Image 1 (cartoon, rainbow, N blue to C red):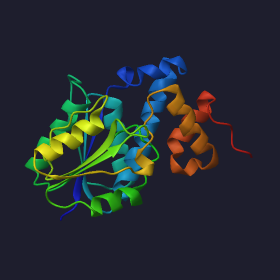
Image 2 (cartoon, rainbow, N blue to C red):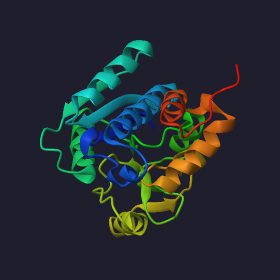
Image 3 (tube, rainbow, N blue to C red):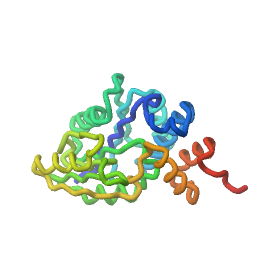
Image 4 (cartoon, helix red, strand yellow):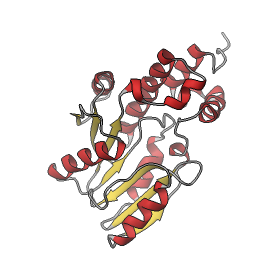
Length: 229
C-alpha cells in the first residue's frame, strides 16, 4: 500500500480546551494549544509512511504553524480552511474528501493535542494497515478516539466525541472492514482536563525533548519546573 495521508483537524484556538480554564487563563490556554500543534506538526513528517499532510482549520494561527513547520521540514502539505469551524468530525470529513480526491488509499486522522506523538510508532501502525482495514486508537481511558487509520481513506465516517472508540469500531464492522482497537502509547494522552495537563507535565519533566514546544510553554505557565542550568 502506498503512503498514507495524515489529516489533522484543528479547532479555533479561542474555542479549544475550555476545561483547561480551571488552571490556565485565556492567553496561556491559547499558547498551549499552539505549542501542542507545533510538536505534532514537527513529528508527523518524520514518519516515513506519511506522504501527505492535510490540515483542516478555521484558525489562521494554526495555518501559520503548519506552514512554518513545512518550511523547517519539507512536506507535501495542504491547509484547507474551515471558516465555520463546524466541529472535529466535520473537519475530519473535509480532509477525507480531499484525500480521496488526491488518490489516497489510506488516511490517518490525527489530533493536534497529542504532543507526545512518536513518528516511529505512527510508522509502525501505518505499516500494519491493509485494504479493508480500520484501526481505532483509543484515548488513555479507552472510551474516546485519539486517531483513526482508515484503508480505504473513506472506510468510515468519523464520529468523535464521548464513546467514540466503540462507535468507530461498530461503524467499521458494519461497513464490512476488519477492525482493530489499537492502543498507541504516544497517542494515548490528549489534553482536555487539568488532570491530563498534570500527566503531560509529569512525563515532560523527565524528557522535554519528546515535545519541546509544549514543554517550553508549560514552563512558562509554571506547570513544569525550570531546567537546571
